[in-house]
Length: 267
Image (cartoon, rainbow, N blue to C red):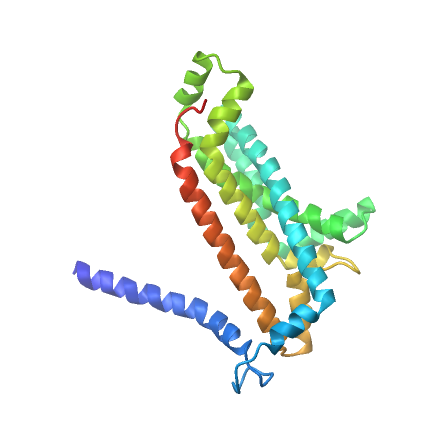
């Protein structure tokens, strides 16, 4: 019976992966089509990639996207870590749950509502739509993600570690630097990479708060797709997919490397 269940589970898992990845591989396959369409594959070519790298405007958009993603991930990680520490510091369980619920509002709310809210806010505040409006919006919806990644590590940490550090004469800053920070490092890395991925992937919120002369890859791909089928979109999507895989691999090796360092007091 167990074998049958195991075999059925594997088949189901394989089917799910096929459904998820088949369209992606289909897109990648036709990015090398010399026919210029996604119907008949004529021969292998790199023309779409050559055109992509020759497009100066698109390269600037790629740099804009990476800049926004890295800055928003870095800033939101810093804010999110201190936010998680603040929530964890409250003694009352009801207070923690209330703050955590407020933190989750931006995660569970529809992107369209969040984007429209930020658009109204920036318009009322007189902030010009562009780099800063996109950056502030990305930071805002990335912070709750970081908090959710860091909080579980704080809840796992035994209070005896902090008490032992104080008994050894460590100051409050030393406790944070040598005990708390090393312990929650895997959560910090997880939050950073999650924020980076969310920022790179976001379309709905960015679509509302971006202005003339500034855009990101998600908005640009949407604009290109509306004009019709172009293999440049396939080539660009292929590169983004490969970049995402590299991020996942880097995150995996970093978390594996930091696992043994999450316990005990560092001197």
